Image (cartoon, rainbow, N blue to C red; front, side, top):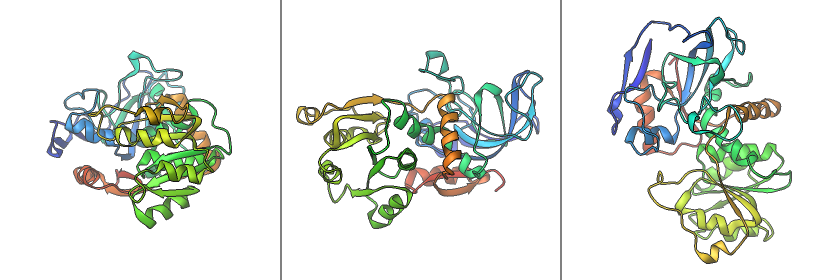
Length: 343
């Protein structure tokens, strides 16, 4: 089969397409399944793995990408969760089924396990999750990382009740999913962007009730408070890290939640908050890192119930994976960057 591998790190030339093993692989044991991949998608972590800045060292020669979706084409003798023809994806942490993550569950596709940028993926049945039937392959391929992260941000802490206000930062994939999910949970959404009227309109079309241009308003917490009648946001999906955490704290409601997901520079700078900002509320800072299989399945039920459709920014062919990486590294599309296996 054809598969990309990370033969070296630090440069896109290290992503090498080749033929490996049988044309169609066999299940790896009695509980294994083989998935014909139909689409895969990129995340910021894939660029970090390539340049060596990701916290978990990647295995040389690993098949890249955590995110993808495809059709089951073979199953082991003891498989009970899936049948040939089922539409599935793989969890970001395949061994994390439920509850808090444990140290033995940190393996990830595209890093320490072979990922999705191949014609076939060989998985254990416990690693896989059914994807919503109404989604295209390209849409289904966007879910494992950014969507589950956004879902966990909104549902992993204190209950987020209808009518509460959610603040999202920017137009990255996690923020876009958070806008959509907050809307289906019945929340009011305030979003920030630097993309001018066009991106503001697109955010409103996704469900944002108010949009603030953070370049025009560097102290955008003031505008957030104005948009919330002075109360602030009940939950902040904090995707900016060092550059935004102080404004997020100032924008938070008195007992708000700030869900700290990533740092904008890949973790090279520390998080600091001034005493004044820290004293401005009694907000709780919570960490989330993607989510378990249970969270993935819970999210998929919500997506199915509400007919939600992920936002896709750009689609490349399987053969143009390097171009997809290069474009993602130099541009910031509105929506996910997807690779389609059939070209």
